[in-house]
Length: 512
Image 1 (tube, rainbow, N blue to C red):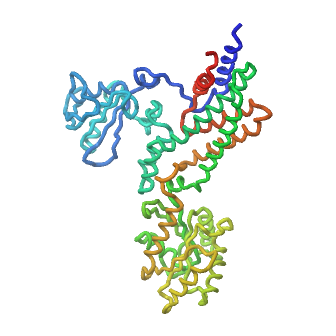
Image 2: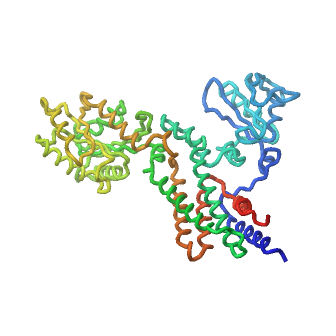
Image 3: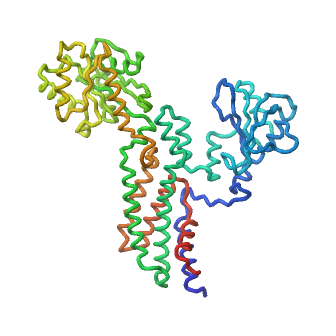
């Protein structure tokens, strides 16, 4: 018969492993000569890692156990390999015929100090299509070599624990970044800021789960110190509050990643299409004095001050007997409901001459365009167009009076015909977009993926389960912590029950 302490340890180990079995990204990996088992016997893959098309230099990457063989065969290295990470100018030859294909640089990255964690080689060759094709065909003719699948190099880096899932996503975002703000956010995520935040939360949850499991299994033997569950209660409560604050980011990171949805809306002939063309500086939409010219959604992607914007022109909002125009109006209202920022364009000629009456008119006009959930209209700009039609000091007086009215969003007076006020409008637009996205380099890292948000919401729900069953069923409460840990693991790609056991033995020294 085992001593009670040993029986308790075994019970906790079996319980933890059993209940954690089937975690979606559970990867228990052994290390052999610096390469994770499962990668050591992998196929060797190759691909063009630089962009397609004619260019001065192209990079062909090779990764896997046959990388050294490929380097020796194609670079004419009969003896030792070149020093790691040192560029060497060599003739690149066909392995069988020894025909010279090109002359370029070769670099050797021995495992585990490479991007994938495997032996890797890079061929820096001239970027002509014929040269690239010849080198790729030569690699494909060698035994044990095959073309890489999409994203396979990065997948191997993840499997070798060179990158976490959040870092992988940051790398993908960095490759696709089109604006300065997107680049900054992606680079911060790829550097591991977001991953470290989630890993810190995971570590706290592992400790909480280990303590609860130990209390369940060993409290009867009086091997657990008093107050352990009190510490767990506080940690769970604090962590739940931290995650909830993290979720209340108004989707700034997601908005910056995918682009701010800016919709131009208003009545017919207010100058919406003219405003779109003026901002884009090209004839993106048809402009006509005929009311109802725009009947469909016209979209264009822009970079406004380093922030990505998807600018949308919509049909004029009015009642119409025309079926096609009615469909355009329906689509316009749908886009306004989905917009991050709405530019409500108004023809100045339709405003009452009295400033107070004009303010009341604009408020009523906003209510006819914006959904009820958009009030107060904090994500809206009022664009009063055709100011060139106003007389004398009427423009200045209108501007001064409207700025004093409470309840109106920022007002911009412009003329798409003379470009008057457009520079000030673009400045206001840029500041509004910047506020919606935030500064990607300041403060805590923000959510960038809808996937992250969904798993974090599941994590909060699971932590609430712990608090619900804390005093009635400690096993169900522990299950809540375990589910929360699994939800975080789905974001980072790391869920391992063995880590829970490590904390049990480390923190409590059971069976010492």
